Image 1 (tube, helix red, strand yellow):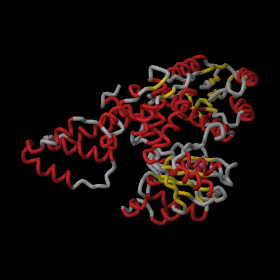
Image 2: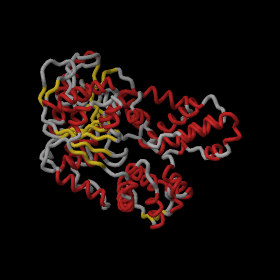
Image 3: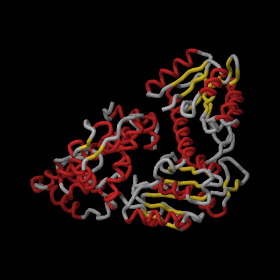
Image 4: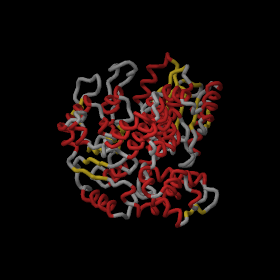
Length: 508
């Protein structure tokens, strides 16, 4: 990973940021003035530049604003964070208008500073992906007939700007389809902007989508463009559209209808030329019946629908994807790619992958790190795959994806339910009346609840809530390699909330 460059004439500021970032395993390089930075940029190769630049605004031998201007000329996609004393706030606002990613007022909270730098790293990585293009690696992999149907649909839509709704389970690759639709469309030269509507708090989502004017609300120090404006001339991908708040659905419908919107706090209409691609793992028709999704918006989005198959529906693609992800993980970690035996591949292909392609990718990354030999055997596969194989095909189909939900004794306790006394009959009746449409994890949760109720427990809510929260947080921390702030963002909760929950649940 490329380093974060820190520019400040104050040694204490440099020291504090270096140590804080080192604790997050983020490399740094420090400078005392803009001249040193420009000299280093002139000598740096293409891959040796900074990931993010954090610069003071006033230093001997140059201005942070002047440095920003020169850096943006050379590296327009580089996120630059301007540090400033409160007295320099007006200058910082000017810096934002000049292309700075954000400003960091002094004295700053170290945790917030690291969080801001991580956000900037994410932006930098998105820019790198955009610059590299999608030709360096395959856009999508799949030989199964169901995936070939998806590829053909993308080809047919290549000359159209029609709105597309992508459906499929979480982790099946809906964003990859959206990116492929953009790349092969008439708008390929324009930007591709993605936003997960379920991951952003309701109070912030409107501003994220439509932008805001200066002074529109507390903290709005400057005008900010929303995702619709950022995607001008290109494609806007609205992921998890089924979770969009009802009142915002009305605003989205208006934009899709006439191509105009207002920024938060604004009085002038902004016209946009954007192709919208939406995605959801939910059954939108059912959401409409429940009254939580607008029917007119559903019909506006549902012009062309692409259904992406779950990985268990295209098992023949598992070997191809496994080898690709093993190669990819090896490149990321700088190690020799591992090979996988036919027996291990066969066992992987028999697994149902409740997390779909994303889960297979994580498993391959785990194997690259944890498998002791260069050839991966069945004994090296992660516990969830091995346990599913031992339990047989039926159990494999309903095995929860996180061990925290597993309670092996539950089935044994349900069998002799007559021994529980008066609770037995209601529990059996409840089990018989289980809705058939429940998903696999919901069925497991209901079975566990019935087992606890059959015991006569009165703390079922607390027990299952604790397990549920533990599973969510542990899964998010696995995906983010233990980074709490990023895990909180992915879960849609606050930094303080995840810290408190980790303490309460004993996950330290």
